[in-house]
Image (cartoon, rainbow, N blue to C red; front, side, top):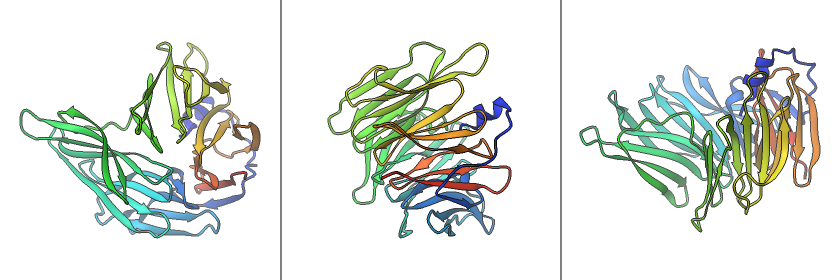
Length: 342
């Protein structure tokens, strides 16, 4: 969820740091982290092995909570929510394992393992999509035979330690290639959001009802999207221009809204933003080309925090207590935390 590409393209010097954060910490590698249970979990290294670090958002204490056994493995896709952390270890993008870890106790479960072979990538591959606010782990599981007629399937699945793995959808596949790009998925309660560049869809897993959203023309593309357990949806639409920066429009859609209905909560060509649901509360983060940022609570709307960041490469991650902004700065990686208003 970084805005760095747009902000760096502006090539405007950043202002003096004045983030006004509740707390500030230094944690190398934390710019790719996710937060839950009062801590930030992020990929790092330990004794030349890929590892997961934990930063306590109250005390600032850091410690290693997972270390990959194979020194040739890397860690990708660290996500968190509902007191659970999920991540994938990957060896040469061929052998992979999906893990789910209890954020408080540290107990780790290997959910599935995959191994793809050959130039056409047969076997099994996995991709982590999301960790819901309830702690459920959403992932893709692709399988394909290595002999003709190469029958296989792509399953969208959910892991819950209490009930195990359940499959949400299945479709045929003849290889196990899983792109790092779209489609992207978010899970919130019974609401499954799937979105790409031009189409977004919300499916109610209990009723089976589906809502679809489409961009209006080729010059319009979807950006980040999010869904709440009650069916509210954030959609970000980007419009390109022949000259100058694009425009961004963020809409908040009610559970019954379809098409591109809903309220416009942000429209800009300068202060680009990301909107998400933090414990069901709607939060808007925006940052200008000069590094001035704003955190705004919606429903009702009020400005919550403003300031200036010393570096443009900032991400946002949130939970029920904090909004956390890890920064990939030119110096040590810093983490700014903000207490959500009661």
